[in-house]
Length: 267
Image (cartoon, rainbow, N blue to C red):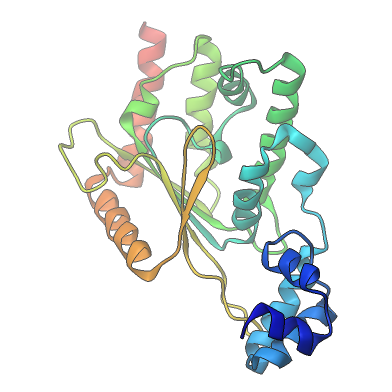
């Protein structure tokens, strides 16, 4: 159906239709119901879309932090908050959900032109984001992390804070919903070689709503990339499975972290 025909049938202006299609304005639930009737959407899909429109009106916690969270990253934070499972392959830094306050501070201080007050707000937002792993309702997501050993060998300038960060990685796995595996440096070329960090987000099945598709997220200096085509998701799923096979098991991973902590004292 052409935009002009839809606008005529809905008795809306073309300008309103353009703003809606361009994602420039929020949608009222009544508008969604009207569009679903016009387009012949199934009752289940209509219910799901109306629910999404209703949720879109409420601000996420991250809105309170203003520009401490980049606008392009807000979508990811929202998806992360809605996920039932988060699988993260990390090759450069400790993932944000597992960073100590001191580590996060050191990371944000590397941003060009970032003042100390801006760093403090970004760190506060990151600490707030980590509450996701401890929430009770809705149930906290399962977090699985494969850490390249190089992440554990890249220390902070403050040895004491670095030891605290390594110890935090061990301590956080005491929670039932967090698991960490280390990909040892002895592993040769593998399927994830060259992919960089990526996150696989899975979402809960809700009886009254069509579930959101599994989404792959990867990040660069200026934005994030989201993939959700079945073929893309399957490819990354296979890579994740191979990483799990190549990585040390949980016990061995924790032993390696403890060994690296000991090495920092010897140094």
